[in-house]
Each structure stands twice: as structure tokens, then as C-alpha cells.
Length: 223
Image (cartoon, rainbow, N blue to C red):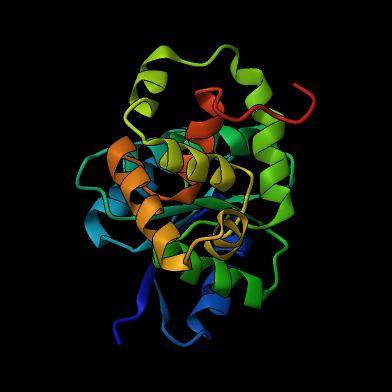
């Protein structure tokens, strides 16, 4: 089986080396390169074609948010970005998710959590399940202001059931939980999710959740 190729972007050498050692010790994962800032992360991604980029948010020069946008924006982009942060409610994390990141991970995560996160993101899923992610998306979507009209127009292409599934994704429910809520087969939910991502031109469930908040389909608690 081809290993998952990982690029680590962080301005702290200890972090880069530590994560490199941890991930290279995991079966099926290979660290193929490192970057000291966002600009190098973009360049190294183009050069090495990693499956997953571990991206620090706060770096000198080109930061993690802009680097994430440059990596994920091209139509033919394949690398997934997993954002690294020190604070679980860092306001920049939400902006990174909007920029195209597939999820985020705290820098003090264990080796097992780190490896799991890389595998989940590489598989095309998203780190949306943890309560911390749901709380973060709800918290910082409050700062986005009025729903954006172009996004609302895109949302209008969804069927009533697809809109319902999208809302449940935004609330952090898994396919199995959505299936139980709607009393349908899990495979049916998978089909709906696939169509939602295709119609809205979104990369994964995290992007779908952000989209739901940005369009006003789902409002943060208390709003």
C-alpha cells in the first residue's frame, strides 16, 4: 500500500522534527518534506505533491491561512491541509477552515491523535467530529456578518433532503447519526453527502459545515 505522504510546515524546528519522528514511526505514513513558512509550504507542496500538509497558522511572512488558500484553491489541487494550532479556540482557525483546511489539530496532540488525524484527512474525510471543532465553527461564524448572496444562490441548487443533510453535517453529526435521525440507510446518507459536495463544489464535510454557517442555513446557538 502506498504510504500517506506528509509535508510539515512550521517555523519551529523542534515542532517539525518532533512531528517528523512521530509520523515516520507510524505504519503507512511518510514525511516527505518540511517547510519553515507559508511560502515554502506552497512551493514544497507543488514540488513534492504530498497528500496532507500539516500547517502551522502563525508563521512569519506568508502565514498558514494564506498558504492554505494557495494550496487548496487551484481546481486540480489534491493536497489536504490539516491546521496546527496551540489554542483550541484560536480565531484564526476558523479563517483557515474557510480558506480550505480540512480540519485542525492541537500541537500537544498525542502521537496516536496525530496519526489518526492524518489518516482521516488523507482519506477525504474531515476532522469535524470533535466537540471542539463544532464549538469553534459556531463561535467564529458569528463574526461573518450577513449571509453571502452568491453562496445562498449556490445553496438553492440543493434538494430539500440535501439541505436537511447539510444542516446536520454542520451540527457535527456523522453519517451514521444522520441516518438514524432521518431513518434512512447510511449508504443513502453517503450518497446525499457526495451530491452536496459535488453541487456546491466543496472538498469535504468541514467545508460543507462552514458553507452552511456562511449561508445562514445554520445559525450559531443563541442567534
